[in-house]
Image 1 (cartoon, rainbow, N blue to C red):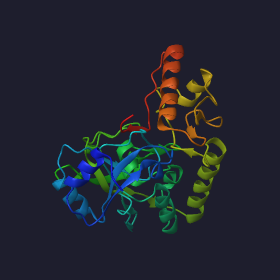
Image 2 (spheres, rainbow, N blue to C red; image 1 turned 90 degrees about the horizontal axis):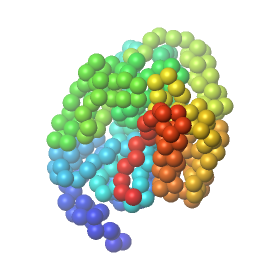
Image 3 (cartoon, one colour; image 1 turned 90 degrees about the vertical axis):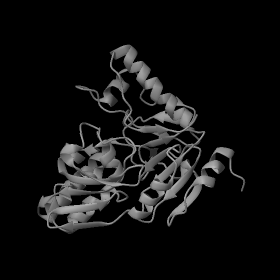
Length: 301
């Protein structure tokens, strides 16, 4: 198959790897099921990732992707390399400290800690993503954020160097991580506490019930669209300006939770991105409040 020229140029200069390099429609890798093509690299090991970054020219953009739950790739694709961390998926524990690779599903952390009577990490069962994404955006749910349980993390820079970060050095705040752009997280250590498995299970079931009752968990969506502005809830603001259920093309603002966008079938990224802008403009105009996206939008229109 003949590749588009920008993609072929990237393929021609990438270094050899142990992992897999392929060209994929990003709709196959993201929860919104939209997006054009990109070169996708899935490293086998941390060393494989380091070698790749060390030998890939800085002129080629690199974007890390976990489960693709909060990423919109534009319809023109991404003229760079998407690095999938899915194979960096080891999870272990030492006492009440849990170590997890960037590709470990957040939900798996909570099920793993349940099996080992480690409490405090149940909130991860309510986050639709992986460890790398949780670190990059300080993901949180049900009153707990990643930084509340994080001890340390490791990432790789564009020079291929592995860097260790203590949580206090990461500048984490609400849906924000202050680590320099270009760092690809590879793993993290979390602190739990001893707890009864029955109590852990009950907390996870409560989270699951709350999610099912309040969020469109069975739809093609990407989690919360906007961060909550200080003193406000994004969904309430969007609802107040009359956009609940509003559609553009195949995309809509969820009837169930106004801070969720849904691909109803056949939506383009442009449809979804237009809804993002419509909500921002309406809330700014009528409430004088700026909505900042929580989802990441990358690529070319």
